[in-house]
Structures are given as structure tokens and as C-alpha cells.
Length: 114
Length: 113
Image 1 (tube, rainbow over the protein chains, first blue to last red):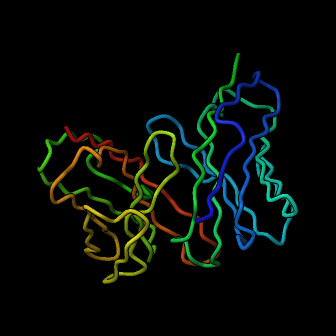
Image 2 (image 1 turned 90 degrees about the horizontal axis):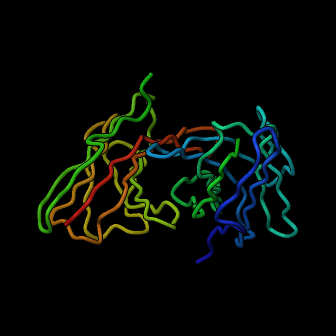
């Protein structure tokens, strides 16, 4: 079956810089995408989501970009802070309304350097 | 507001032992899920319950059973634990309208020796 993948397993950024975490997906039928943050020893925490009828969505210090042409999803974190250090997962859903079909990537470890 | 609560947080079992992982949510969600997370892999769905009284298999159901006790509680049972079931287990519940966003508990770290 199709699955979500990540370009880089680790990413290190300087505090205050912007972070960009990438995600590739292969299922062209996916219409919903979501980013989670997972701190060590904790459960995944929702960050932001986007539907396939949008190219960009902004939250507080975070922006998700969706490029359906190349099946690419990215999470941008502005002014990265030490508290942003975590593993970031993307997930896609090929069947609207069914969380059962969420396919998760393996995650990118973001480390914020002082 | 506690959200999704899982117990225990840590557990060590011997091969062949049984145990039940407990999960409760206080958000009045209809749907609840059990996932496992292994190093270097994404979350994989074990079982889910779309509503009270119903359960369905996910991607990796072998070796597990579940019970949707009521709307709040969804338990996961290992009848005869195996080392391959060493993992971190997450319970989640879902907003019933407005998308597929899942709310996760803090996880149970299970080791089977």
C-alpha cells in the first residue's frame, strides 16, 4: 500500500531561525493531511492540518504548505524555540471522514541548538 | 480537562503473561483507537471503535483484543504477550465532525521479556 515518507530523519536548527520539515506522500487520492508534534515520553500533539483544496494554512508560528503536483507537504516553524525540539509526524488520509485510514510517516527529529 | 488518559505508563511482562491496557476519554468522542509505535516506524493502527458497542481490526490486530466498555473507555488486551509486542501503545479519540484529527494519550511503554 501507499505510505507517507519523510525526506530527512533529523534536522538541527539554531534558536531563532526558521525550520522547514518536509514530507512526501504517494497516494494521489489523499485529501487531508495533518502534522503532529511528539515530545520525548509524550503522546503526539496536533499542530495543524490542511485539506487538499488548500495550498497553504497558517497557525501560530506554523505554516503548512501543500504541493499536490509533486505530492509534497511541508511544515514551517517560524523563530524556532527550544520548546520546539521534538519529533514531527505527518499523516495523510485517503478516505474522507475516516480516521482509520490515517497513514503516519516515521517522523523527523527536530533539534534546536542554542 | 484530562483529554485521553492511559494506564499504566510502564509495564514489564514475561512472555506468555496477559495484561490489559486501559484508556478513557472525557471529550464525549464516539471514535476511539489503539496504535502501537515502534522505533523508526510510524504509528500503526491495532484496533478501533467507531462507536460504543462496535470494534474493528486495524493494520496489526494479531495478538490483541479490545473492549469498548462504554463511550468513555476502550481497553486493549494482550492474552499471551510475546517479545514482538514490545512497543509504545497509544490510545486516541477522534473529533466526530470537522476532520480526522486524533487526540492522543501519553502512551504505555510495554516491554515483553
